[in-house]
Image (cartoon, rainbow, N blue to C red; front, side, top):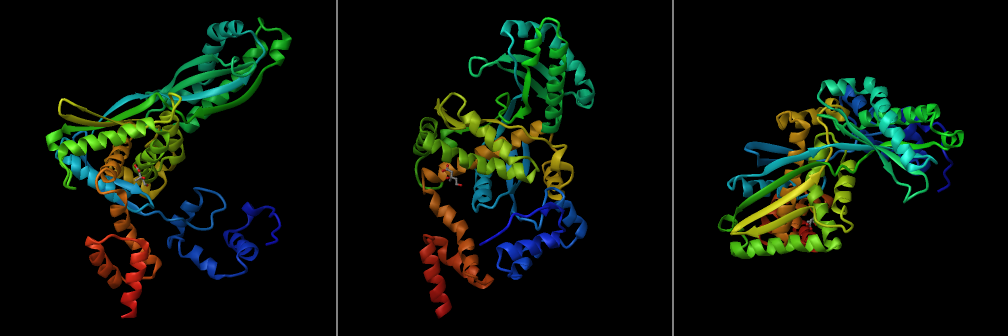
Length: 442
Ligand code: MEV
C-alpha cells in the first residue's frame, strides 16, 4: 500500500469519503460500498440523526438489542434492555433474574451520588498562604463566578456541593488542585461539570492576578494545567444485593445447596485475592453493566474506567462483588461506583435509548444506577454459577452454535436441525463443522 495523507477528509461528502477509502485502501473494489450501504437506515431522517451523533460517518454499526425479563428490583418487575454482541450475556442475565425472582429479588441502596472534578494548576506559593487565600477569598469567588452556569442545575436540586484546595506539592513541585464535588441530579453532568471547572480556571487566574498578598513572581508562576471532571467517582455508589437461606439456594447441576454455596463463595474469595482472576470476574460483571449502559445511551468507557479504578482503590486490584455465608444465609452483593444520566446526551435523541428508558419506566438517574448494579451482579452470579458447576463452555458454546452456523452459511432448516442435534451434546467448533459437512454431503 502506498497511501498519501488526506487533507480535508471531514469536508468531503459521505459518497466522496467512501470513494476515497475504496480507492486508497480497498483496491477499488466497489462491492465494499454495498456492505456500508446495507446498514444505512431506509429513513433518511433517521440516517442523518445517526450520522450526526459522530463525525466522518459512513455507515451504522449495529449491535444486537436484547431483553432480559423477570428482574425483580426493589419490588418492581423489570425487563432490562441490553445492547451487547457477546452471545450468552442476555441469556445469563435472564437466568439469574429467574433464579432470584422467588427469593425476594434484588435489593438496592444508593450510598451516595457525588461527582468530582478538578482544576489542576501550578503555582509557586507557599501552601499555607495559598490556603488562606482560598479560604478567605477564592472559594466564595468560585461559587459566585459560576452562578450563571449552575442556575438551572440548582433549580433542579443540584449544583456545586463543595470546593477544596488540595496540596499535591509532595507529588509534583508546585502542583495544587481545586477539587470540586457536584450533584448533577438526573444528568451524567459531564458538560455541566467541565463548564464549571473551566470557569474555576479563569477565576483562579484572575483572582491570583488581583491578590495583594502575592508577590509579582508568585502571580506570574500560575499555570492552569487543565480543568476536567474525574471519571473516578468513588462517592457515587450504589449497592445491589441478593440473599436467601442456603436451603433455598438450589442449583440444577445436581450438587447440594451447601456445596454450591461454599463453591460459589470460594470463587468470589479467589477474585478478591487474585488480580488475574479479579480482572476476568469484573469483566463478567461489566458484561451486564455495559449492555444496559449502552442501551440507555450512557458512556460505557466512563463506567468501565470507574469500575476498574474502584476495584484497585486500596492499592491492589480486587473483586467488585462479595459474598458471605452466615447463620445459614447466603448473601452476594456489589458496590458499584457509576455515574449515569437519564437526561441530556443521547437520551433525548436516540430512538432506541428513548425506548429503553420508557421500558424501564422512565427511571431517575439513581434508579438507573440501581438497575445497572443489579445487571452487573446478576451477570456475575450467572458466570460464577456456571464456573463452579458445569463450567462456562457448555452454555457459551450452545449460544455460539448459531454464530458458527451463520459463518458456515447454514439455512434456517439446517440451524434448527443442529440446535436439536446439539441439545444433549458438547458443542465444539470442530464438531459443528464436521456435522455440518456430513449433513451437506448426504
Ligand atoms: C465472559 O465474557 C465473562 C466470564 O469470563 C466472566 C467470568 O469468568 O467470571 C465468563
